[in-house]
Length: 321
Image: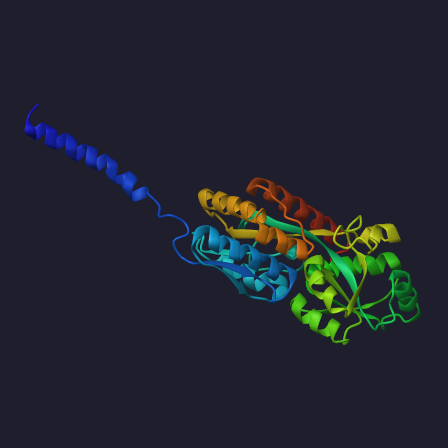
């Protein structure tokens, strides 16, 4: 074979190799990653995500930064991520409220089609809290008081999911109470612990940070059975208000068409982080439980929730905002 032949073969081989080199992707993450929490700081969703963000920063050696963008029941933060490049530099970390959005309002995105399910961070339920100096010692005393004073008893909620649970409870109890909606749990906490609001529905994640202060009293949990974290607090089910049962989740989504490799890498890192002592202890103190699920399993759960809210809206049990 001539030297010219060898040269041509070498050029052809090099040419064939070039597309493979061009297709090679840089290691992820190569830049800081934003985790957009679409609620105000201080709530359960925010605190849970900060625990994971710290673990992910240690895991990858690249900064994972929590960015709070509250407003619109989570719409403002979610919209920002839906419009972000699908390159793994931006995720949104809502709670179960995200799957309710298109059934209660007209968001500028599709909560299902415009996002990639990545990982479930934890599960939680809601707790009905009373200010310690309020006259409400338990649910029966609250119901009796509210029945005698229609519309006079106010309660705080931090998102549409807690509002939905509260509405289910008042309907089951046959009482007329007044909802005060906040942009996040942090604001509701201030009014509740300051004695400006007698009641509030908050996630277990938020509640466990409040109990040591002695300014609030848990009256009931929204799960079908007692929480292992609040064993002395009755469930709505055992109190006779099972129609208000509710279990929620904190989740992580990327924009639509997020590459499968990044989705799976992030999912694996989340599950790994949930088993580290630092995150496991943080979740325990927040009274939320890790929920390891693959992206496919998460997509099924999200679809199931979407069907649940569609049925609730059709039955008039999920008012539009």
